[in-house]
Length: 212
Image (cartoon, rainbow, N blue to C red; front, side, top):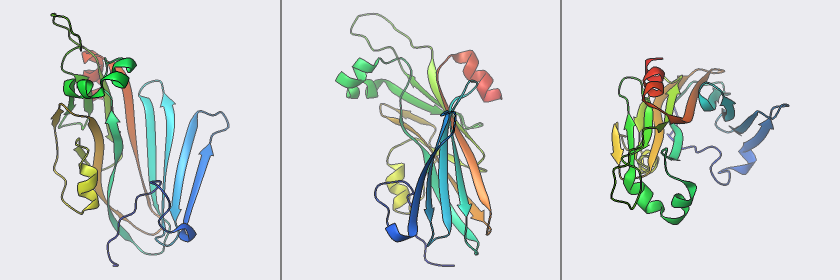
């Protein structure tokens, strides 16, 4: 019922230090790490956890809570920025990052929302065909009706309150995996979603992941 506002948790210095609480947690075994920000003036809390998973690679689990006594309607944008493709060595990124960008291709499967980050060809200065037959993947679950955005300017468009268009293919640039969704949270309610990323998956593994 109030005026709409933008909240970017864990980004830079707190906007209202007196009303903002930030916490960092680590599991006793050291296999998971949790970042948390609570805005007491908004009655909202956001946290995300990084942990490893043998089946799905790195998993980022995010939770958004309504800690207030009034319902909240919101639109969120979350995800991973500058997801690297498989097949380019670290030295090449350090010495010729723009060259690597020119070979990048990002695809999103329309049915599952699976993001596939790959190279259109192997990067070489020899006169030979060189294919890269593996890719890195990122996917989301837990958010109903989410949409995927690949371009980096989606963040600025979201900040400006503009409508974000769905994107299926991005070539020749740094790929992102950003998801947007609308939520209605009753007092005491929360929403939870996951982003899972893995590297070096071949065609069979990607097809199995999409089917699952």
